[in-house]
Amino acid sequence: MSKEEIQDENLVNEEQVIENEEVVTDEAEAEAEAVENEFELLEAELIALKDKYARVHADFDNIKKRLEREKYTAVEYANEKFAKDMIPVLDALDGAMKSIEGEADKAELFDKLKEGIELTHKSFLTQLDKHGVTLVSHDEPFDPNIHNAIQAVDSEDVESGQIVQTFQTGYKYKSRPLREAMVVVAN
Image (cartoon, rainbow, N blue to C red; front, side, top):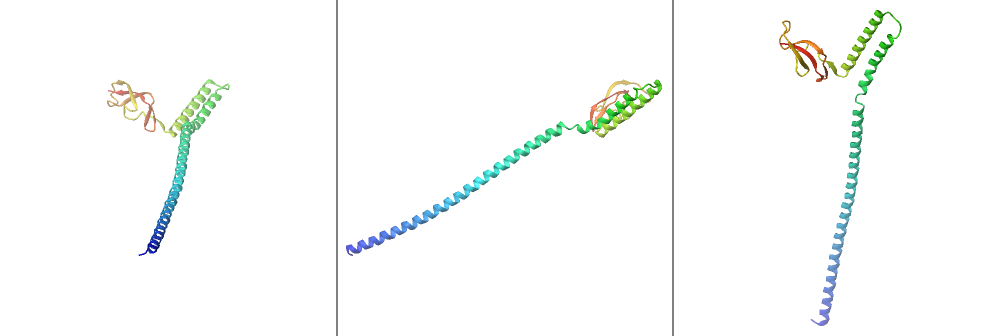
């Protein structure tokens, strides 16, 4: 082989190497571009997820604050219905007081006053019952959860452990005692 042929062959080989390098470079650039596109997509997805997280977190905080306000309001005004229902009782007391202002016979005045007090008492008990407050019945058997035995007496009329007399009425709110009834029990 002559020198010129060798040079031509080397030149051809160099051109093939350059072409191969260009192909490899093009492939690397294409791969780099694909990686960069994927990176950009992932970055955009990350930004969207961060935004979504921030919005959900803000919504959660707003709901939490709203529920806290509603709870505070509910506690603050929990007795509003009870208070409204007590107003007629006050009206009945006002009416009883006005009925004794005029000049009248003492016996008639006493009867009006007694009737007014009885009606007011009945109205008051009705309103309490409406809200779950009930009297501890005098006829119930002795129960240490709702009765407080302040005295024990001998009695032939009543069995041992039964209530003979009630000194102070007890009250329950639904099933819980508000105040125990003070009672005398038989030995």
